[in-house]
Amino acid sequence: MKLDILAIGAHPDDVELSCSGTIAKEVSNGKKVGILDLTRGELGTRGTSEIRDLEAKRASEILGVQIRENLGFKDGFFINDEKHQLEIIKILRKYKPNVVLCNAVDDRHIDHGKGSKLVSDACFLSGLRKIETFLNGKQQEAWRPKHVYHYIQWKNIEPDFVVDIGNHIETKMESVKAYASQFYDADSTQPSTPISSKNFLDSIRYRAADLGRIIGVDYAEGFTVERYVAVDSIFDLI
Image 1 (cartoon, rainbow, N blue to C red):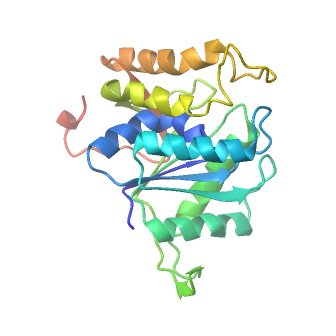
Image 2 (image 1 turned 30 degrees about the vertical axis):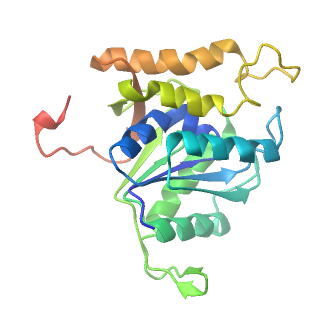
């Protein structure tokens, strides 16, 4: 299956928190979208990796994505080396996405910056024909995504462009809340974390509202780019 968009996150819930409104919008527009998680989030303070697996499945159903895979890299300890790059290259060549969405270039969690650079490097290397990879015993063709965009996470990084998600904010929130083990629950007896507070859950909506305010819509998500954004006409801008 060929995908239009592949959203990649270091942990299950990275994608939902950061760009699920954009995903929901593009799915509604008929685009084929997939999600790739690099780890199972096994070092998370709350819940377990098994619970996260089920939550990720539920979030995927809410968003209506075509596929979701998990590479099972070691949470907190994966590195940007040939071994890890090749595993991502296999996925890129398998699904041939035109657009890749990935972690913020700099963020509070060390896996986010690492994941950002790892995915970016893999996207470039995936286009080199002399790097050989195999899937089910068959050699894969080289493939390089046309665009790599980095979503915004904990830090308030200035976006290079924003996407109007006004009609999809509720789907975004529902996909985030699918990770019930991780986020605010007044009755929870689990340890508190920076992302389990009510303020953090509320911030998902008010950050989207603030980005939307800046461009004159209700809600938006922001991204940074690796090269100039090109438009065919200045009237492409809203």
